[in-house]
Image 1 (cartoon, rainbow over the protein chains, first blue to last red):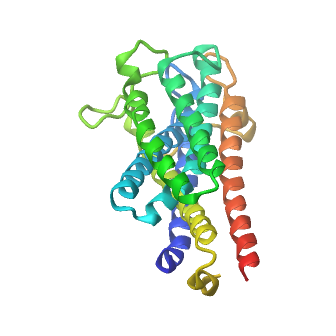
Image 2: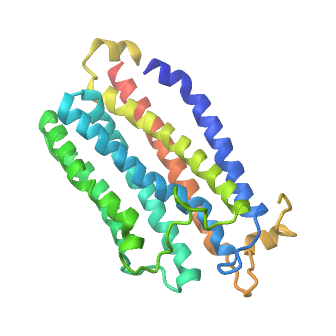
Length: 228
Length: 57
């Protein structure tokens, strides 16, 4: 915790600067899109949030597996710390997508496979928080939380593949590992910057949230008293 | 590559596209929502950590 505390300000300021510069680049310096006009600039806020909301769930699934197999307490603290941040990023992804839908699709909501699976992810994050907090016994809560996170992880490939498996309004991925990006490089560079910056900012939030979780759960230990 | 796309602040706020529609309202609302969500989360966690640290002390 002490090493993380020392690295925290560097990660925070570096990520904040990267994010703000990339957003400025995307909003003001990139040209208008031929099809979507200026509304496409929402991509610089929507895509990082969407990417992080799914990545955070994957991180939770890995940490849950670590807890269930090796009983590492810290990993379940991490799962509980990530859940509210995952809910916030999924909320941003849903809201920004809905707002983007108004000028692009002519509607703010459609019961489309990608959007519904992302809504399920948001409900899952909220459900996991409620489930964990509804138990009086921490050990039981941790175990149920980890099992449910692992069960829910089936939704992540569904979100990812929904645009391929079903006919949806949502456009397919513009960046893939195997093909040339469908987006021009002038627009792609600030997108990468915003993803990196946003990831750093969310990492800082996870650090803060984990710190809170550890202090809460270990408050009777002498080292916590010394630490605070 | 690094030319500013808009000639004035008003143009940047309106973000009028070639089809004549103003997209600024959508883009700037998303910017505002993201800034609010992230800042509130940071303030919340900082406050909660301070509060619990005080209690433990």
